[in-house]
Amino acid sequence: MEVQQRPKWAERIQAERERRGWGKFEMARRLLRAIGVEPTYQKVKHLARQMARWEAGQHFPRDWADVYANVFGVQREELFGWEVGVPSPMGTVKASPSGDPGSDEVRRRAAMQLFTTLSAGAAVAPANIDQVLAGIEAALDDHLDIDEWDAIVHEYGLQLPLRPPGAFINDISADIVAVGVLLKRRLPEDDRTGLLRIGAGLSSLLATTQADVGNASAARSCAATARRAADASGDVRLRAWVRGRAAQEGAWACRPPSVVTALAKEAIQIGGENPWPGVACAQAARAYAAAQCGDTVQAEIALRKLEAITERLPTQEVTALNFGEPKLRWAQAYAFTWTGSSQYKDAIPQALALYPPSVRGAVANLKLMHATELVRQHYIDDGLEKAIRTLQNGPTSTSRISIATKVIEALPDKARDLPAAQELRNLLTTAA
Image (cartoon, rainbow, N blue to C red; front, side, top):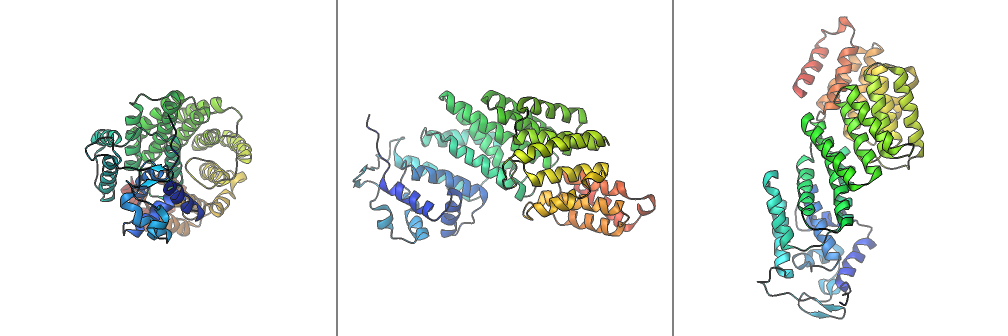
């Protein structure tokens, strides 16, 4: 069978996008703004998926052609050269009869209907979404783009630290359901293992979001699924990462130290001495668990190992999927908050200097650690004011509540009845 070349209009819209340095998500945002739609994450993600099909030449962007031309600042005829149904020098793009369930027109309508539903903010219950997605997938095509799914996981990793706790629970849940639907197909082995890897990553990130909002049971279930899916995928780095991440989440949620250290041990056994983010997460979790038990010696041993691993990791921006110096200093600050070890007394200002303000959750936790240290140094009014202001200025999470509790514990007896101390306790009670 002759392999048909990609249509020139598909090559052109990709080239115009890349010439401007826009990724698919940025292009989707610009297209949405051009039609007066607020580019929320969910809308951008779904339009970016459709754009991947347009750039591959699988479908003509009939309803978006004028929008493309407007965003690029070129004439429609110059950009596309021909319309659907008109022969082109590269081949013919023809609309099949409207009754053909496999036609481009039927596929286009199905895709646009789904996008319109999502753009309108309509909610689809997780219990029913698999049926919805199964119908859409049948109406579209059998194309499976693992790279596209990798990009979605990466985007979640970028966005999670920037958004309030629990912001992506529904989005990630919907994507996990979609992966489950795809896994029900008869797939080549490479596609199946790729989807299992995607499912493991999404499940692990969902565990993080569930833990952030205090859904401990849901977080444990998600983490367990992530481990099984990672094991089935055969991806060793991923197997280490989902365990290391689960160990960290367990420590922040104050799960028993034995549970945290067991998960961390598994990650370290899988990853060995490799400078992998999962191994770094595991060493950080070991430091947290030891610090919470007041074991300064073991906490410092784990932190030294963590520092050695971090030095070998590439420098990257802060995301939920990687590990770097900001997270190293954060781990040292966390351990210092529990143990008071003078070795890491400078970790809090160092971490605050490294984290961009946009990573609000990590910065808020560091401010609470600083408040604890102020109280210990007998700057009680300053420490209480800082803790109260931090909790009032942003959403809380399980880790934030745990750290803020340290401020109360650090108060001397004579300060526990202060109005500010009572206000902080009231904030913690409301948050919990």
